[in-house]
Amino acid sequence: MSISPEIEQRLTLLQEKYNAMGQDMTSYLDGLLHADFLTYWDYIHLDTLLSLQSPKTQFPDEEIFIMYHQITELYFKLVLHECKQLSGAENLTAQFFTTRLKRINRYFEALTNSFEIMVDGMDKEQFLQFRMSLLPASGFQSGQYRMIEIYATDFINLIAPDHREALRSAPVEEQFEQIYWKYGATELSTGKKTLTLKQFEHKYAKTFIELAKNVADTNFNALLQQLKYKGESTNALEDELRQLDVNVNVNWPLCHYKSAVRYLNRDPEDIKATGGTNWQKYLPPRFQRRIFYPSLWNVDQLENWGRAWVEKVVSEL
Image 1: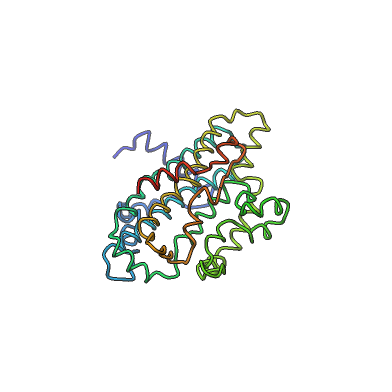
Image 2 (image 1 turned 60 degrees about the horizontal axis):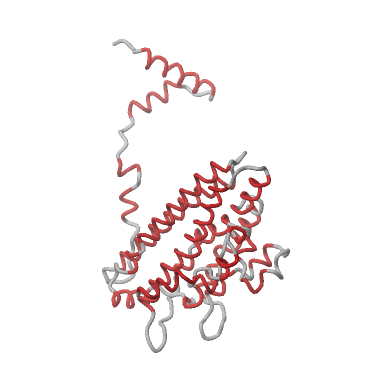
């Protein structure tokens, strides 16, 4: 059997590759000869993936709750994949930055547009019962989401507004003590840290502080300023950053707010979240005023941050 020029060329290239690595190409060809063909289910570890749902109760809709949160974390991993590329890029350009931000925005928009699975996709009475078996776990404890926030902006913008100016020049460790989300995980009656928050800090605090230090000069806001300093056109990039601000700090928390109102709002007193988080004050954007890129918004937009979106969502409930 004759060998085509195309095959001969590839064999030559393979020989050069393995020679450069000090490896025997024949051994690798033997391995290829005996290897099985790859299947879809093996490639994505389908059997393992489908075995990762372990409900704590017998309520059928708990599986919906588990799977949607797992899907969310996979999307967050996609976002962090882009964050790491941007933060670690050499010779970053506005075009590369903009392209990756478009990906990130698509990921968040996919999550936002699919959240009806959580809002309308579970039986309310089932949820109110199986949720009690999840204490003190809470979606608040998503470490990947907090990492996305740290990549997205200067760390000072994640500090609670009342403490921001006083801590602007403080070390990251000191700033971290006043990070905004800690105020959403306090006991409603005493103001003390919930067990949810204590667990979360024990697992992730060092990771968050180290990441904040590592990306102090390569978070998205810092990278934007560097590109502007170099004289690059950043108009399209700024549009994507504004969209990211809205996606992460308005639309995503409002999805959760809408869900919380549906499931936890009950007269005369609202039902507590599983982690004891103060969702009424923590989720609405107009209360927290989380804004990654204040310089990209005008005074009126900053003053009324999230208000129109909140009013629209509440009016639809």
